[in-house]
Length: 187
Image 1 (cartoon, rainbow, N blue to C red):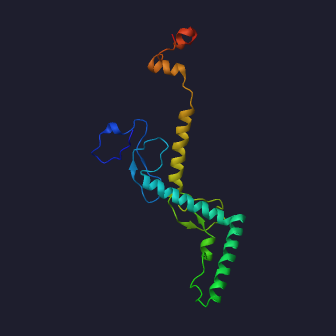
Image 2: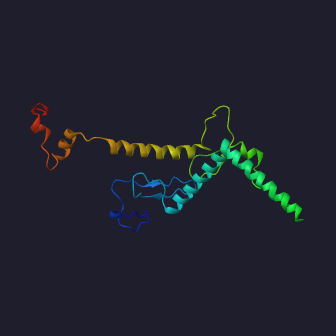
């Protein structure tokens, strides 16, 4: 089934019955959309791609902070310095700026974990495990995690046969629990 965003002109039958309209998780988008799947987080392919780029950037940043990433960066710097030496020998002017240098105050800051949020914030002594730049980002991701947990519980839930019988009658091909166990009947 194709999911159509609410534009006022699309018929309601194109919206899946089991998915409520929701807000796109990507920071800055804020578009309401009808998801094609209960676990959909983003309103469009463009927002999903932006979130993937954000995720790759964050993963690269974490890798550069690891010991293996630092070692690779040192090797890269050595190769770069060797290239600079060769250029000087060939009487070419040296490059204007060094590659890959970050500002000192920016390296001490922590990135926000909401997809699409590129803000960085300083770690505090009061809450050293803080992961979001603001309460809006934290609540947005909490809302998504709650919805996904609810969906997972709903999928994993085993239907209660008696509840099914009371509301719908016995499913086709099965015998009601009242027939099997008369002691379950209410007077």
